[in-house]
Image 1 (tube, helix red, strand yellow):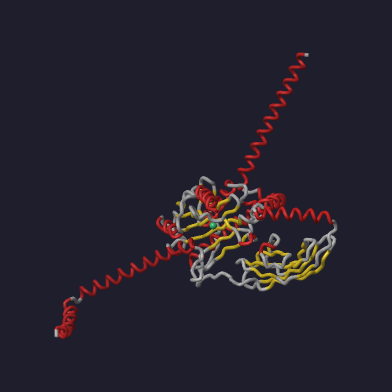
Image 2 (cartoon, helix red, strand yellow):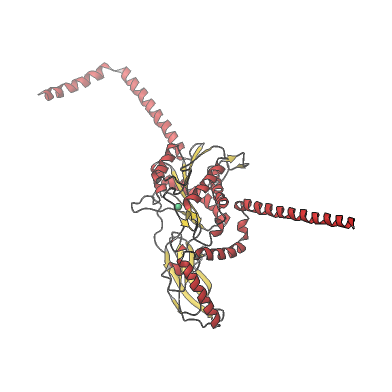
Length: 462
Ligand SMILES: [Zn+2]
């Protein structure tokens, strides 16, 4: 019953209200509309500004990958979490020389064990615009080499990450490292695969992951094996990349990147998906074989319609097992047919196969070409080589072989790539050598002059 009365009264109330507030209410309502319109316009303008680069001072969080129980990659005496920290500290030191940037580290020592979400939450708590996670790499079968940058697969996070990645990769390949590109990787749930990138995005921070080089590959050995002072070079390099990307200037360093040409990357309309298919073609053809020099010449035909080809290599044992491959070579960009001369091992039947790997590390193995055992010229030499191989195999079981072969191969690498040493990274080293040499020279001069003085005195006495 009560409800009935309510329905009866309602229209009357409304009617009364409109009657009691005529001109005054309309004016107030119009004013409110104008006010609301202005609020929307101003908010829209600030939103438009926020979608371009964030306003200075920039807040940059550097994340030394791993830490605590989480060691990261381990190779010989090297522990990735310790290397990452040294690189990160050097990066902060260098970046703080620039104006208009505030720098934080996610961890200050190697014992701290923090989760990826904690790192991202920390970045958000200090108002970070970017989080750079620093790493060193290793690969299955120890076959890959070079540097790479991983970015988010989503909208502006991708665009900003990719623009920075281009600057970072340009500096790393200038050093001589192989450019493995700027890539995205997705989880089964179609989210960013790398936790630090995913968690950063959840916090509204652009997360970027840098892999400087592969610790377990001979080609990358010259870029890190000198130790901490060389790792700090990576830190300074990344600081420079950030400074160029954010167009910073430094009075202390005497550099001005305010006009630096930052690459333009369009914000993608959909998820930027990685390529998951292997190279389409990998075909091997034996052209000729010279038994005396044990040299075989092959034609390697390879193609990938979706991703660039990065590496190729040969196996003499059918190519199924990654460990049977010789050190991979860089596949020349844009090529589809290579003529390759290969020195064949002697004394056994061979199953020669080639492999090509694309930029997303997808592999395709070629057909197999069987080559009958080549006759050995000197019986004695072969037994000697066999004995040596046994020793090497034993050492391999003890995990020592990599060091030995690396040391030997690095020697030749260093001879071939003396230009590598001609970078900033090696300055401290050269100064040290120069210092020691001049000290030695000084001692020698003192000794000679003393001998000369003594001889003169003797001469006078006589
Ligand atoms: Zn790592």
